[in-house]
Length: 339
Image (cartoon, rainbow, N blue to C red):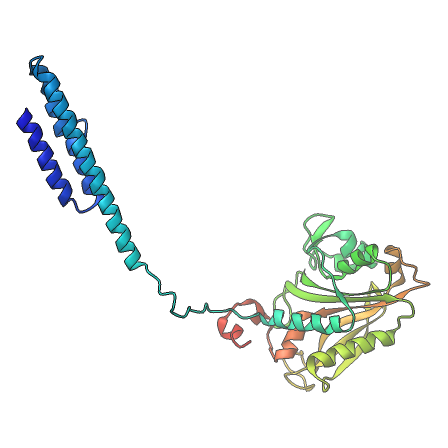
């Protein structure tokens, strides 16, 4: 038995020294020290020894076990140190090398022009306000002087969530919220997404963007409205831009008008984009209806104001000579990389 124990110690030391990885070390541990290992098999024969031999062989077996455990721990430490050294070699970083710049994205054309519009109106003393896209019927319609039987409430035009909640069809509700919480003078714009059940074509989409504007103060007239919008058009397109105002009707303004820009594709001659008219509507505007002011707690006898709603997509189309609104939402990199 003594000879067997010495052989196990020597053999285990040799094999552990030759072990190439941690898995081999663990396999050797199980082979020699496990419940069915070689050392355990020898210890099971202790019962055959005499009373005088048992203590001697027991002590020797413990020494062999301790020697093998020490060799296992030593080899594990050596292999871990070697693995770490190899990792440091393969993963080393030369901090003196120049870094690789990440590829930067570009702003979407809608964002580019929206930022430009904000700067134009901020330069004219306007503030930027925002509001929820899921809106109450009151703010989207009733407070804007649009009664229950108005055609704009038809479910074919508006996405209703229930009878009282809908996806806003315009950013005008933000004007109501601002006037409810701020006394005149008011001078603000409210850009954002709006939703209408429109058929998709070159100039229409069920999701699009508007920039609503509002000015309320004493002595505001239609001349202030026209002057502001003409200044905005020149700042955006240049002094040679041609615009026109046409009488129109909006429930929340009186009098009302629409402002058109001459078609950039045909220069007024008529084409597919402008539907043969030579002009493209870019915004609606008018003097704030007295009932709208009253709904917000503002005395229409003391204050007046004007409001306008700009279609961002049509502004961008005119700005970059784009003839199809659908290009903005297709995410074609060949189109987007041009901006």
